Image: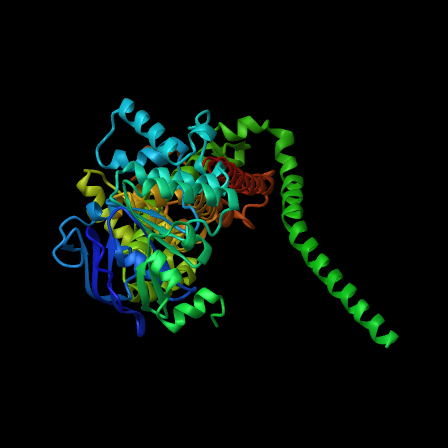
Length: 258
Length: 299
């Protein structure tokens, strides 16, 4: 396994992470670093543990009582599985974009404002300003500015995903966790999201889970390639695509993966 | 070959016909009940205007006074009280079992709930007489400085609430179990605490379901007869407090049908009571359906 030495600022460091669900060994000896303000793509076929790895980063795995975790995940040098005081604060640092958008059962404005409200920012003027700002960042403002009080579920699925992006950005996270965020979207909505990511990486550390090779080629700076719960290969995206080292990687890149 | 084809097609027709007949049977039952009740009620409606029946509380069948107000108020009050007790209990239990409890607890609770739902009504009645009636007359009423036999509005409501809990709880459990986990994950990722997720997102998302569960509970409570009849006191007077006896509509019918039929219009009056019950349950259903429809549009 090659750990790339060119990473200077690492945001997250995972050491010897093992995850079991009941008797099943889902993640095996995961060791990797995730660079700050870059797009790191976790690549692999379905069922290889990509999503589980992503969820273990902000401890959403706590929701599943059968999950057992060993090892450490360090965010800014602090292990999130040991001695972390405020789990809500930890999660707030990581915006989540899931496979299918999960808009909150409220109107469009409140979807974006919700995270701010629960953290105590309730001034109307402030909320209005921030909601507009982040809806613009997610490239949604023009489409919804006249119907902010409409229910979020009335939006198209592509719009809902951008709303979820705005909602996640509004709480000012450091990291964006994206779990195949474009798999349910039409090509144009997908492209919008990808383009946003390319701009957002100047401010945020982005971790994107995908099985789409072409998407990884388009936007990845750094690749973590997984197979059956193990990291097979990781490194700079250019290096990964031009000079893959492992046979499995070569097979995956050729598209002749069983 | 051709014969086989024909026989298969015949079989297809045959099963379709059976299904349509079954459907017609189901559809015609409520219609026939409504027609029967309406027909039997006409005798009384012809003698007394309907508003006089509803807004009059004097019940003296022998002298031709059929005022249903006390019965209607009894039914409404006992149902409301029962749902006030059962509603929060079910809601909190459902949330705890689906969001907090370990799976083993849930696995243990499911058969308990099913057993509660399967206990015959008359057993609840006996339990009410043995436990709740003395509790009310010896402890609760004296605590409020009231003399009471124990056969009261509150006794009936408590027994009734215990009876509808398994029904409401089962529906609520199903609703909370089917909420997408992505919704919780998304809300937690915004920095929400567990309770905030439940209060702001899950409960809101589940609201149409919660309303329909309560609506079904109300319908059931309104028509429940046996257990209520055994503990509610059955005095046809307007109740002035929770320690007064009440006489709900189903108890009126069950207690008197087949007796005192020599009194003119008496059987017609009982049919009117049944008609009120029937229409009320339909109205509950309609109202909760409209509420659900409106809410779903807003979510």
